[in-house]
Length: 410
Ligand code: HEC
Ligand code: HEC
Ligand code: HEC
Image (cartoon, rainbow, N blue to C red; front, side, top):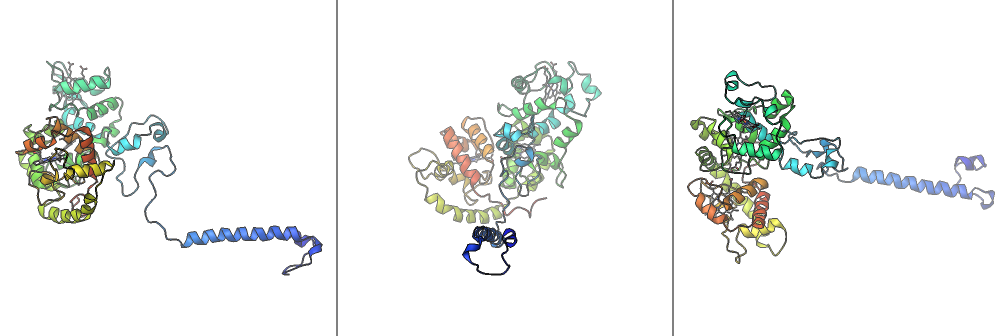
């Protein structure tokens, strides 16, 4: 328009004679006007369209640095699972890192166990050994020295077997799968800064019965550990939790972590601790369970042949598939509390990794428990690995029976 002006075109005319040489310049201006109008239109549409309220994906740009691993919506910043990082762009270098962090595969569990079971003898970053311990023969080496010469598989062996004819104890359960979080911690402990160690193992600060702070360090103050190896407690009744604690304590149920933790507190605090963590009373379970069943029944009935592990799990759990010689898990565990006895846990909403581990233990005869544990062993005897994966996927995807979070926490 500037050029047409220079060529003598007056302003504010709507037409002009064809031979004066303004045609091309005017055509360009017209096209430009339409392009600008289209741009404004996009802006207006964007202004008026309804907005999604959900925050976007956790890593929409495929970025490589660690802060993108976090789930945004009221996530508790990186406290339960501290990954091992060696490069500046860990998410690019280790494609499965986020999955592993979510699964809690890193060493928090090991660090917490170390602090309560091993520190007395070996000290810790920022914690020196006592004089009496140093007078032992052989003396327990400070932990930095103790781990120096060993590779992870060897450390696994040492932690499981102990060192005969010395004060070094073996793992207090017959299980082979438990020592690895401790080994993960031991591979990191050399050169760990004291404040890092203190942050890992500091007690949770929340009110509760004696010992609650240390339980909550692993299980979370509301029983939601956020770690696949550490089960949710908020979905169970206090009766079940108390029974579990008693069976850990006397060794009927095998777990080195929990045998240690349950015998580190006075027996009379087990009941109050179970009450503190078990958010589910029988009454709320019943109400919430009915709602969940109403919501879930349609999908269960429609289960056809499909490869989806959740569907496959549903068929097994409800015994919809009569050809297999497997018991219906729901007849004891229910999708809800109606048919469940106090010694039978709720499975809906439990962590998938934990369910898988427990089912493998049951099947392999490595898990004991309360008075009816035999029945559960029997139920798991014929499960193969695919059944187990499907059942764990199915139960972990069901809505937990707890009342909406928030109210009972703290
Ligand atoms: C009652 C004291 C005591 C406790 C508790 C204890 N240890 Fe030891 N530990 C020892 C002693 C003593 C040795 C030295 C054995 C030797 O030199 O033969 C040792 C050795 C070790 C070694 C090095 C083995 C070697 O031969 O070099 C490692 C690793 C170790 N302990 C890890 C642990 C871990 C992990 C825990 C907790 C699960 C733990 N210890 C609990 C006393 C203890
Ligand atoms: C070092 C971490 C750690 C500490 C501390 C700890 N727990 Fe656990 N807890 C675990 C792990 C891991 C399991 C799963 C054990 C298994 O495989 O059977 C578990 C399992 C349990 C279970 C069984 C849940 C179920 O569904 O069967 C109960 C109940 C429990 N813990 C309560 C407690 C209480 C109460 C305390 C405090 C006295 C406590 N825990 C301290 C790690 C811990
Ligand atoms: C005869 C009743 C019965 C049947 C059928 C049954 N269970 Fe169980 N289950 C139990 C009891 C009782 C326990 C608790 C045992 C204990 O710890 O003392 C249990 C415990 C469990 C646990 C451990 C949960 C935890 O928090 O530690 C899992 C997982 C489980 N059952 C899954 C299943 C699956 C999957 C099926 C179907 C294949 C099934 N059960 C069938 C009675 C049963």
